[in-house]
Image (cartoon, rainbow, N blue to C red; front, side):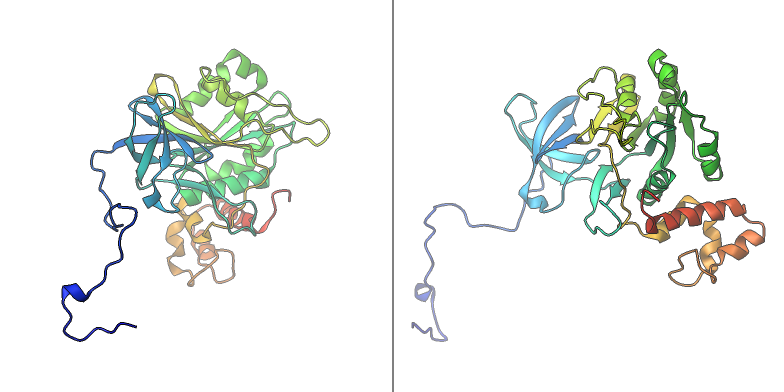
Length: 336
């Protein structure tokens, strides 16, 4: 074993030869100041379609991003071949900060968080009034996810020709959520599409709903130039629909009036990732009353200060009931 004295010079230091002849690795990464900015339209097995100056470009995530993944709706910086031609591939080098984030887990016991869409302004919760029957607990869970992620909820009730909407609307009346009621006839003649469009103009709207509620049919009516998605049918035995959308896809409304994000139909909407303390932000009339709550208050316990806040007349008791119903939905299963 060779030992070095205290007074070694450069000739005494052995260097391992670089057999590959390439440059040694460095932690200094390029800043990519000339990168172009775009919006992620869809993600498919590691390949992302990014819209850059009205040109769809196929790209992949750069290694330096690590495990940070880009999702539909993300604003990203891209370098490389931006021509959008066949067999070309660009590289996403930066993901810009997100203004909102819609997330879910497979169920309440699953810690793995699935990001559905980023930077959406509102969440359109599509629910059929019949065939299949509405699932209020599913709606509650979508509302909690919207409030937690910074999205404004919108209720879209379909198939009103099969059942009236009054009972379901009464359940959510105290939440002051905007809604649109549609029938199959109105979808065919275009009147329903016009009413829904009024709620979408100038916004990025993510559409969610369990299979068979008519979500993809509505999206195809809103964006008729894109017929890539086929419409499924409802199973007459189980009452559940067949999945027709397999990955999220951002579609532009005509006249650059906004974006629609069609998402896969879901059978469950887990809320393992949700911090209940953030849901209160969606209730501005109740939020000031939490100042006297005990630390880590669940807002559904005897010491909660919201009871006194409501008794003093600062908010409607029905609003507090709605808040607690939404918070409790995290502890219930979708089928309850």
